[in-house]
Amino acid sequence: MRYLLLLVFLLPLATSNAQKNTEETGMYLVTFKDKKDTPYSIEDPAAFLSERALLRRAAHNSPITELDLPLSPAYLNEVNGTGAKLWLKSKWMNGVVVSAAGQQVKALRKLNSVTEVKLVAPVQYDRASLKPIIPNLERPAPVVESVPISERFYGNAWGNISGMKGDSLHGWGFRGKGVLVAVFDGGFPNVSYKDFLGYDDKAAIPANYDLVEQDDTALDGSTHGATVLSTMAAHHPFFFIGTAPEARYVLFKTENGRGEHRLEEINYAVALELADSIGVDVVNSSLGYTTFSSKDMNYKYEDLDGKTSPASVAITHAFQRGMIIVTSAGNSGADEWKYVGTPADSPEAFSIGALNADGSRAYFSSFGPTADGRTKPDVSALGVNVVAVSANGQGLTGANGTSLASPLVAGLMACLRQAVPDATNKELMDAVRATADQADKPDNERGYGQPNFAAAYRMLMNARK
Image 1 (cartoon, one colour):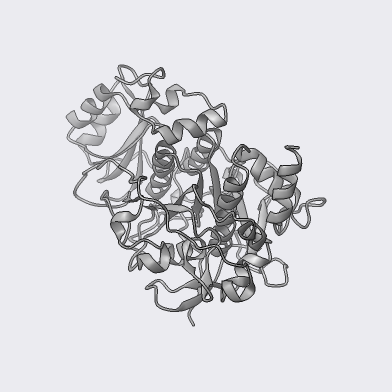
Image 2 (spheres, helix red, strand yellow; image 1 turned 45 degrees about the vertical axis):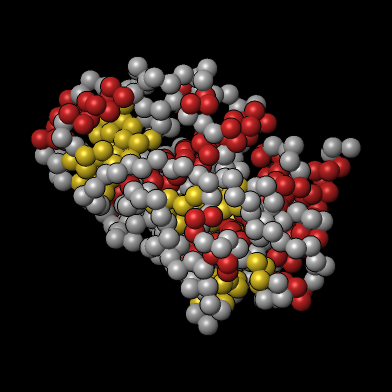
């Protein structure tokens, strides 16, 4: 059995002074001063947000703002006029990522519409297709038959769910049905749809999208994503059951195996924008950003303020729009760094630490607090010898890391979302913290402790009586 210490993709971007004001060939983040002359308007949000997204926002009293408007076409034309190749667009960051060099970079910096041009990575690819994501939400989620909830039924996954009393949610009929979950990772290759998602073929997956290579498949790259996905989505009665087998999943490849650069954090932010626009309810990101291939891009502890990393800032925007973003706290607890990474530092991220089977903190699980003194992680879940479906869908594997603790919680957050549909994202997260096993004395090792999802559900329902 292969064991993975999933220290996972360590990367960032942000307002760091360390980024070079260079003109070398590379990928550059170009930010604009405003959204002048955009053809879209706040009064007609259906032109750029799905019905599902609008319903989620309405349930959270989240207004449509200028931040949600697509970029100015005039400014995009100006960028194209410099000869730089357009790669990514971000409405929340009000900017684009381009491939550029030399005179092109100089020309970009001279544009009146541009406020900043920053190098974020070496050149990644030669093409820039910028295909839109068009989710298929018409196909129903896999049907999970109603059976008695027991250790025998869950098979090898019983330990993944029972410690958090997630089996109680399942027993009450809450297995994530009707909830849309996004998974951000380094890829999902060799996914056997029956084994991982229950669908007959990949065409039935609501959406999968590759921001690294700008194509419409995330079913390649690192096997890490498939391992993570299985702990939530797999449904093999009497062998292995994930924490949310009836949820629907959209897959985003945001991590580039060729190196660790701040562009990956922009990928993350753009993926959150896309997830928001199609109506995603819960996100799992078993990712963290602290160090990079270029040392001058590395974060310092004082940057863990929830406002520096663009991924952390994007989580704030997504949370304000009604989403729940569950993310791994990091595996640096035994390292010199020691602390959580970004975007786990975001005030609105539901950051997950790792536990041993006896409930104690796993030695590698990252510590809080954030630089501005906030308790992190939020809660902690099993992160040692977590059982998962092998990346090829054939057999099982064991894995260690907050990368595995995070999806166990994310799946149960989807079940809780189904169970209490009128609750806000804040209410759900607060209830899980308030009923965890050290809620009366949270610390920066285990946060509020190990969740008890049955107790969180009862708290939420009692509040509604």
